Image (cartoon, rainbow, N blue to C red; front, side):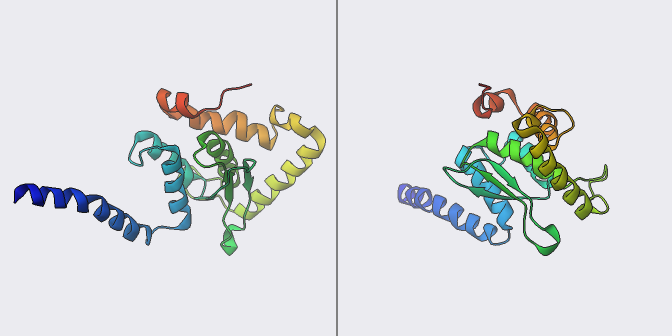
Length: 180
């Protein structure tokens, strides 16, 4: 009888966890669910130190929405926070390098004070960055990624490397795209 009971428990346990996860997801935002999906696609344990570091940066960035696509070019799309349109990170499923590089833009567009609050006049800051990014694209072309002081340089040469520096060596070895 004990063996039958143990088999029944083993059979029901994954189904119970799945049901509990589904109930918990009802109370999460779309952004939280998409972050959980990113971790799942990349095979990262959600309770790991590295996942917690990534989540802290997601929160610092204002919890942008993550949109997945196999053939997507990694991009950051600025939304209208006040009207509820989320900022969006377009990344390939499970591609953590895409995610971190585009998350750096979300951090730029959602600057916070030392106390963790959004800066005053957030809309003006976001509009200014968009204006600078557009003009820098016209002036520097692809060189804007290596030109100090540009929006792309700050995101990819300053912010993204600081995120990578906090992650474990094994995580970096597994997920960081190697330079060409």
